[in-house]
Length: 452
Image (cartoon, rainbow, N blue to C red; front, side, top):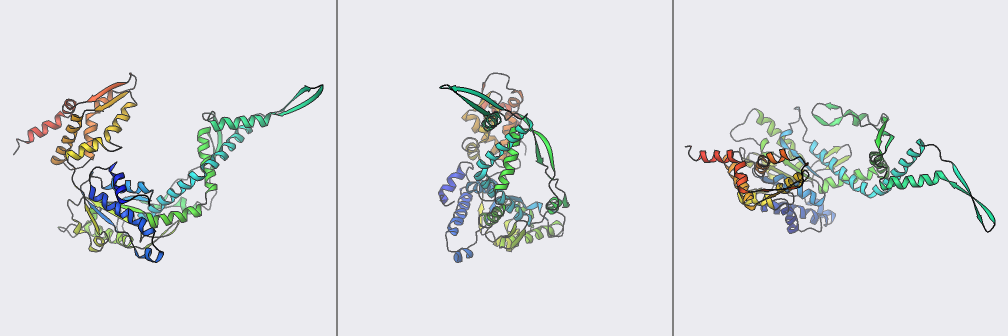
């Protein structure tokens, strides 16, 4: 994190997200402030809490992607939750507290993966030796081989330990991957079935509570050497990793570096036009979220976590309710407000051509598997962008997701006919091809001009 300035963070986000510079700047500054805070003395650091961000904008304009890419950039614990799946305490549904527990789980997994990479080499060496021993145990015991050699009239007796030489050669074959497809029988731990104590609540299950009281069930399974290695490496790594240290570091990271993205927050806002029915429950969810955003302690199965320094990013379309319809206390906890702009044909064109994960590049890679070399004319891409803007203007505005709908319709016949049994063929998508494939869509807009 310390190596990236706000400008560098925005430059990285630009590789995947087109436009929305205000939102990118806001999250870049919030992320850099994390690093600045970490460099301060303890007394000063305790007083500084993150400035939470509220993003307002239609669906498909990049709200979620900005937060997700931001977390990936610095390998920070990140959780995306839907505000609509929570219910007020006392109702059936997920408790708001579960988002903090999910963040801790994510953080623990992140730290465990890092520790796993550190011990992977040692674990792999141990796993290969275990597999060798399993194979040798099934084979007939090797005998010693005795040979005589004459040297300068003297007779020398040489005893070769065949078992030892076989063992060394077998280990080399296992390490090189020659034995990967061989079938062996190993003892594997069965994955316990999750049985929820409370329907709809995945946070507590019988397996977690009773797991320590009973020995783990094991069964013999026939698997390839490659599959066996993977299972044994995980088992060996678990022995080499200090899980207490992992849990401690995981909680620390969740507290100090965690990011929680609360999507669809506008759906729990109370519209100024209604004050009864389901709205009571919506306000209850807002009041349940408030303590976690303000800062409190949550008891998890890994230990106690404070939420004071977690960065909360909330997002919503706010096309029915307004930001002002959220309860005042919750509004006050999101001081940074960013409004994301609607996408035009200019942005759609850039989305089709510039990002590393552009949909055109993805489709080209998919069809290459079936010997189709796909490419797009510039005019074709501009036409697709123009149609996407038209569709969003005249129908529901779904942002960049409209491009997926158009692209699937456009390439439907090509994708269906491609089978990989023919030599590599070049297919160029032209403007005429786009107009023909989307003829019905364009007719609809031609007719709509004459409807009063």
